[in-house]
Length: 554
Image (tube, rainbow, N blue to C red; front, side, top):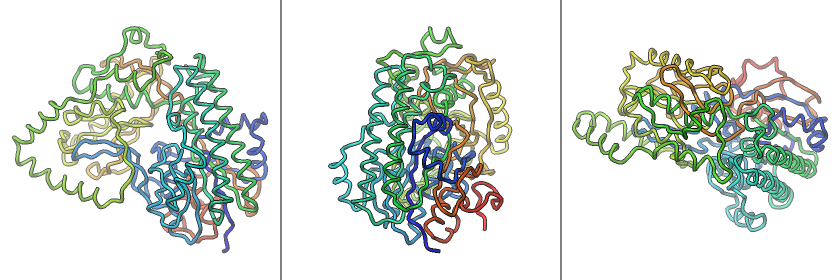
């Protein structure tokens, strides 16, 4: 079947509930007009939302089950090293005969898609790859024409300072206007011969994470002096996004339009709990003493929210709560331990060689150090712990120090299930001093059932937190925290959305579909046959034909 030209616009991090408030009050006329003439879908990303790899799911067309990747954070059981890894898969369109131009589409590695043209990682949120362009000379031309991106604000957490909060909103709104001009130039002048033009704006992602407290009356920091400039900043961001959509709709001509975001946003339920409190809880459970220290004034008021000085920020403040990563003497001690056990070293040698071979065989990907995360500062103790918390951007991730899997494993396979149950009890005993309610909403076991076969991106237990928290209270281990909040917004909303303006779909609401249905929809709109192994099913097919979200159907 011949395909239509398609313009796909990713509104990364847009929160549907907040968006609908703006649409209802006339704040986003261009998107409101597009919505009025589109088939409208709510998108459910399910448990995959917790991987933090939404844009890899779009670019690859693969669910975590299909791709075997469960998080951007990787753990090497042979060395206990952790890192954040970028794009790993070939974009799905590399296998179809269509001309594709991308602009800041995250997790698109141009080295893996020889025919793809455009610019990536200029100003994307979590781009998953280094800045690049095809043709290669395009990147220099692009930066000369549009300038460098104001990158220092992409992941900013400015809430302690009203002035910094205001600057974040204003500068990223200006960045969207630059993005809009750049997108139109790419689509209509520089690379105008395309079948799919795929542009993603990530400014809403960063600003909702940094400024959410301004628009959420229930957030503990809503009344902070930065609340008003945070709300103003988010409004500026959405006005700028609407201008961008208007420009791309105009230059799209008769192309099919797909505007979407993969999942919902809302208050942050994870930064403090996963990055600080969970690692400390497991440390105390093992060693019976604290590593985390907080100001006495904070500890004396566990039901209040610690507030940082306007000149302070979370990145600097957390260095005062926790010592630096374990000393070289600790590492040397473990090396001496191994040196005294040549048989153990001999046993581990094939494992290390296998890991090196596996790394060497993989295409290069962007890797980021995670030593800035408080959880990583417990890393020197992990070999001596039965279970420890991995660095995480989302829900809590617990790895068990399992014999036969981890280099210094101390938990027998026969004790694995029992330890999981004890950890679940430990976690469910924790309460949130801000609310008095249980701190944990639910706990999930690893998708890989055999713990010895756990992948490097999996954890044994995944902890889903309940609400905003600054501390944990445990009946035996005591008060952990409180500490100041980091990001005020996070990935807690129930749904993303897709607006599809195509004659084959009836205008109106079409209910809830899987977020994995977006990629197969683009494939079908381009007139290409279904791609074998791709997750999801095209939105052009009625919901009753679907077996389950994210499952490939015939």
